[in-house]
Length: 503
Image (cartoon, rainbow, N blue to C red; front, side, top):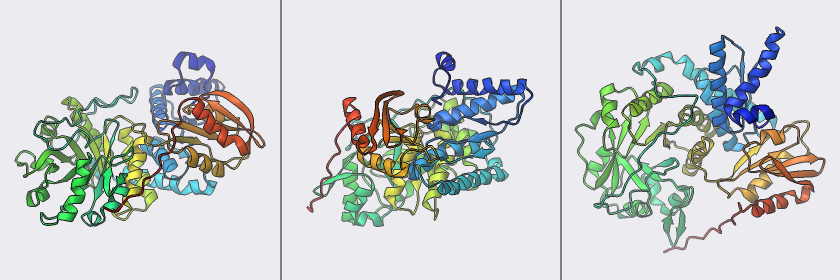
């Protein structure tokens, strides 16, 4: 979306509205000459911008009674799970709404590796659209508060500290979006490994929160009161601000001091807080009665866990819940709670990106809780990737990197990996790695810094959209990029990991 004409930029700015107007300008020329063999493509590297542009374009087409195909894609999405997550948030969200006729997953990988995630995104959307019963299982409601033309996040109130609190409860959720990790009783047997997988730093066996540490943990089965070692592992997490959530029935059987009791909405009215529990979270399915949703919206719950059953459409149920929250002006944070059984890694990434990202790009949702048998660290990083891809919470450097093509002037995969290794510890910084100058400067509109192939063996470096250093030999370009970041006061040194010392 950085390739807009100067006259469009001067009026609309670098916005989805400008993208739509630019596309319609050329569409009108085609129609003037009775040429209709074209489609629209609103691709951008920012999934939120991309989704907004396609929705605006579709609305404008509906108003004009046009019906041209839409080609979907998040351009220069990058590589690995991050590239797949951004593609799922953008492409998957639109497919969930029935928008899109052709798709392209753009990865900085071998071209044939783009086919599998593209096919899976299509399958996820088809399953949603074909499950007519899943949508009908959600009570009918009228959507009045979601405006796809104007993005705005919900105004929420995070947990506040009470005089009676023994621990600091303000950090169980994060202002920019929360990650809650599901853990098991068995993982408490190896606390050092558990702390590491939760993203904690450790010193002499004690955990400490870091930038990518889970904000809270959810555990379905608590250690018995006599199980001192497991309870100590949980207590050390609580003492550094990691909240502990557990089902109310489990907390009643095995009370845990300073815990958050998770109560099903159907049982909320008669629920009695267990001994030691200091806050309440409420599980909502999305198919409850209007009266129950109104009741939870005005409750004193510290958060709502939106756990939609498999036989109910997550998209419909989620939007109904957020409609109810907004209708009551509720400021309770809502956490998207999803459960997987034996899903492969890429399907977990693509499914959460599509079905949860569809809400997050609307500003609906304040975090995510993913239950999965997959590696705890992978699930945590996937959760953070979902939040970062939805432009909520940054924990690492953002990359915009194009797929290889015939114009590419260097080995994109090798160079992107090298730059990622050297600069991946700079949250809040966006770096573009572009193979050539044909599309590079335009398509890296969101980047703070750009590394662009200018000629064979030569690299141009950008700050924003301005080239500042030209024709740098490829062998020196990565070091020059680092120096450029330092010159602009965006560099921090990597922290040296401290080795845990046995107590």
